[in-house]
Image (tube, each protein chain N blue to C red):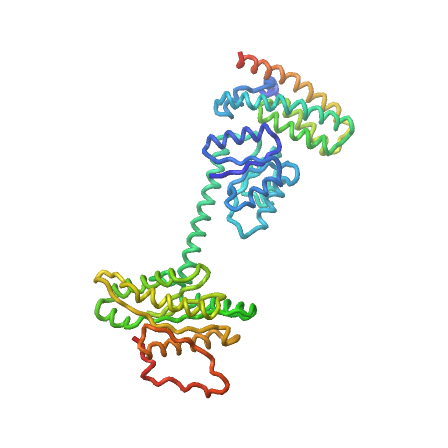
Length: 124
Length: 322
């Protein structure tokens, strides 16, 4: 019953995992964060529009893109939220989309400040 | 080694690009399936490809299917990148022609190891292609001189004769025989004989255009096919070839040797469409005539005109070579 995964909340951003994936290349990590900060808000806004319009096809496509972006960056909880949204959109669950999008926004709200904090720190 | 990355998502693409550059690959990164195909269809294009499953234009499996329908090009080892994980999707991906698949987010170590598998497959293919090319060369070329062998020349000649007949042009057949070659072999040995043949082969090759054929027809007999040429050019070339043998000695392990060549010449335009064997028989007769006329010269084979009776068979004495 006590699955440790359920007890320990996953961090919004797994910095260590990402650092390992880039072979400790700090410069690349900063570059990836910069790409993310540029692409993520734009895709999120497009997704919001698709969800509001009930455009299932684009909602599925955009949540898939966001999922890839987030998982590459080490943002597992937000990636999971995007994945859930993709599943719902693919399954045609129009009624549940808005709620799932809200969950994704919540996760993103946890993640983004961490990334900003990191970028501020390394630029100091 | 070149590798193609196709991923529409900038972050993943950059991460892959850098990971692979660090592993020593020459990376070409594109954003969609259409651009991926453009790169993969290029001559000398990448032969390793990492393709994202979900992409605009063509998705990963569509790129795999398109590449696999082109059988004439070198093998391309393709890995699908997917965040999809179900068995059905894995099967679908592999059946579209992918060699392997990786689930995102990928582990760099695993990615590199899987690409090394791809490189091993490509190396294996290269070796097989090389072996096949060697065998093909050996089947169509003479081992000593590397000229085309008799069978290959006959095939090419038949094709060329048909073509020049169709286009109302003329193909010249030159049959050359090294004079007194048996004497060289008997007195200097076969090693020197081989040196002579190799050098003469080189001189013949040096006397013709890149699209003409030179073959070893038999022991010391060579055949030259001049495609698409007028009679004056053919006779001039035949004379050049004769001189290329006689004008300077051939250097051998046992010293320089002065040798000559007799040639029979036939212009297909004067004969109309005839079987290759028949024309070769005729040019062979012209070569006998050159031998009979004292060697180191050429004779042209011309069809008998209606007024003349068919030429009598040559006396047996003239048919002797050497």
